[in-house]
Image (cartoon, rainbow, N blue to C red; front, top):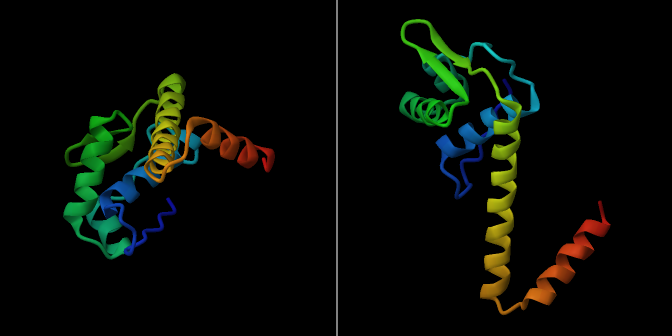
Length: 124
């Protein structure tokens, strides 16, 4: 598992950790039933609090991405491909929604926002 945290980001550390673990699960880098590092081991490796890692793991379990077996560890849950795609779609929708809100807050109209999106898409 390759995790990079940005301490100067406005995004809380546990959310950064969650997002990166989710992305590795969705992309298939972390396979079904693969064991994740222990809370203590990952906290030590990342030089963050064990409570932060525990919070991230707990949230991932709530969302169905991992399963924790007490005394054994935390494992990647059996993945439903449609659930994974829906999770990715939600992340993209949230980002786009935030960008549209920002554009509206500075006075852009719908047509101007669509024009910007079209310009950006031309680069891809």
